[in-house]
Image: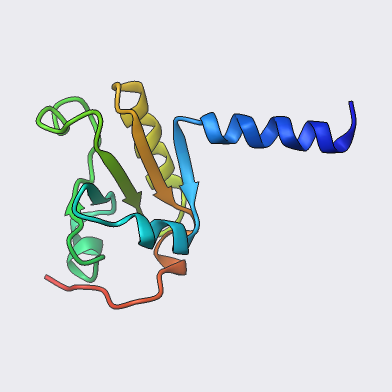
Length: 116
């Protein structure tokens, strides 16, 4: 199989991925009135500075998400990739359809953070 064909196949699979890693630009442009931004860090981290309008959910499970629509776009972030990606994968397993996380976490965020 040619390299180009393999690359095209990988791109198609990535587009179909249930959980997407978004660059800073894509993440920021996805924040809107129809999406929900979720900070999955600890409360102390959240209180020291978070993205304006972000909800704080440091525990992602069936109970904490019981009142959330499964078709809304959810944008998750943490300090890096790991916690947000794991939370996004948990949401997918619970039946959520549109989930993305900020690739690089708050380390790539360019903009002000809100403090509690």
